[in-house]
Length: 230
Ligand SMILES: *Cc1c(COP(=O)(O)O)cnc(C)c1O
Image 1 (spheres, rainbow, N blue to C red):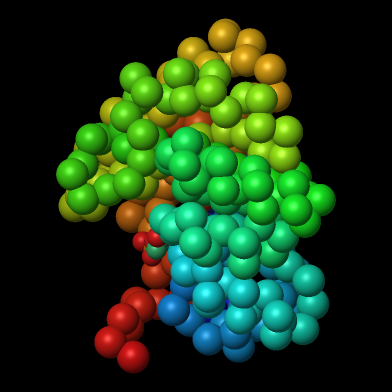
Image 2 (image 1 turned 45 degrees about the horizontal axis):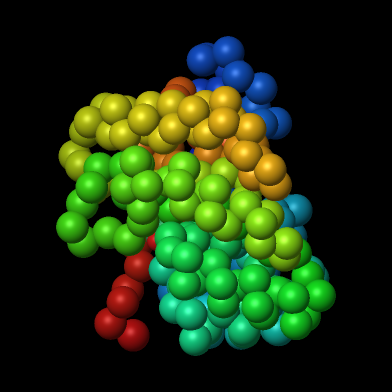
């Protein structure tokens, strides 16, 4: 079931990319395995899937230690500074950098472990109270401040769009994130790349791809509904 779900979504990603004139190879489908057992990841490893998304440090580390083959674990959830030391050398990409305090901690721990950490800046494009992330207007000053952090490599932007019935409602937010990435590129800030736009989930990944997503994070449509009570 998980394998056929994955293959179906992968095919939809490819079709959506082609329909809007994009190269499907430019879009990474991240299988969001949070709350799901390691066996679900193992199922997808059998068909060559390499990118998985987790939102809790502890769970990511457990899966990292126990998985049968090395795969890429994306940290997509909010990161607390006291957890940074556990995860800097186990994640391929932190999608949720949103404060100078967190950047300082990542820099410190990455330097200790002699690694460079790839990060995305989380942007609260829709300015939802309940969500983490920087406001659009704060992103460029933030980047200018952390550009000199030698062990942090900013590779792009991430947003979590509002939960809406009609995914078209989120198009404006995805478009705004893309525009922000273009504005950043035009500033030519040292050590800052904008190759990645992580946006789009089960309900709205197609619209996100049409608006320029290079990573989509899909959980429910691949693994089924999550049960948070266990
Ligand atoms: C849970 C989660 C997803 C996946 O959401 P689905 O709607 O299940 O596809 C994507 N991104 C983030 C940041 C998440 O926390």
